[in-house]
Length: 574
Image 1 (tube, rainbow, N blue to C red):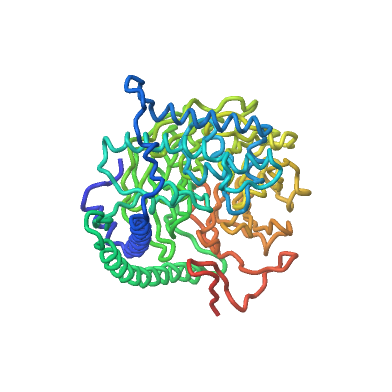
Image 2: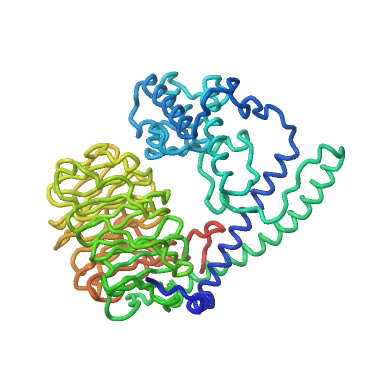
């Protein structure tokens, strides 16, 4: 198990890098708390009209058996299925593409709602219903349409029972009203905001003392305005420090790159999506690095004598998954270095690939025998049985931005709905070779695949059509591919050679460069996309700068300004 005693935890907390990121997380958490409390104040000052007394009342029949949350959730799912069938049973991808730009639906979210896997947020549900109704009407549906009301009513029934069940094991917390939750933007609230406890009493309306609420509200607003000003100053300071870390990392890397870590390892590599941590596998341990200083952060994360074969950060960066050659998986908290739960066994051979779903609710693992399993990273338990029906061995996997799981097989790429564990389609069915690696672009409009014959191809995932001839002339099997976070660059590796591509022009950007690794097994971009890390075999991790500007034919341009997109927008540095 990992080193979890207080002495080692104190050493981690004393690391300067961790202090910077802890400061940013604290500021972000405080920002979420202030937003939550401000919304509660506004709700408390509103008249309590249409408060749903009828929704909260018990059944008029005292002998009727009370319904459970699962039953009400199932009823909601049946309503949605009936509507879906009535509207022609459109493919989930059609529903996603038909939703207006402000309504961010996903294939996995639609599947979960129609199959009663999870209760969606009310605004997400209404967006889904409006989009389905638009197939029937042939035009957009207004949110005041009377056909939406049965879905709102059923959602409230399920939500009320869910809250009552939680209240049995948790103290009551103030919650926002249904009307406030149903906004024009259906994106789910960030976890830091949704789960932030209110640490000071929330002002409430004092109906028994007329005239007292306005004074309380004004005093609270003044206090929160002061807190907000303090928060913004702290956020600006934290943002500056994070941007300085990115600049420090970029400036410290020589043009020909440099190595990170000891001259041994297992090749496993992952860049954190939320900060500048790099995770590497070193024999039987995982090491975290401060990418700005090149120094290790805390003690190694040690499991047992098994070797680390692959690593993956969750989308929020709050979990790190590691796979081992004995078929086990482990979860870690990268902020503390503590293990999360016990090791998980479910594979008969070494784990060669890990991937989190975009919402962080699922973890997919692939072993050396081609078996694919899904896990709940919160509980650490497997979700269902291994995926069946591949028709041939699986060599690679990746999640699409809309939550579907793609697997690379012999001659094909298959698409799966991970929420129910069934295959959706073969998006590529006549591939010439073994799909050894694959990656989706951040917007989901492109799929990059590499194969054992050295071909790198781009595809349109929705149609399965190839986007032209293979890119470049790779001389050996393509082992790994990765898109930069902004989608402007695509990295590929064959043998010891690493190449960068512009996926729009299909041209190689700059010259190919040789890595110190005999075979490159992993490539990963930093959070800002300005640094590319590569690793493989028993060699150390190699870090290289990525170009910021290039011509249409891929020639790297000498930038007069270095551009990057930070928390405060597009910034330039001379």
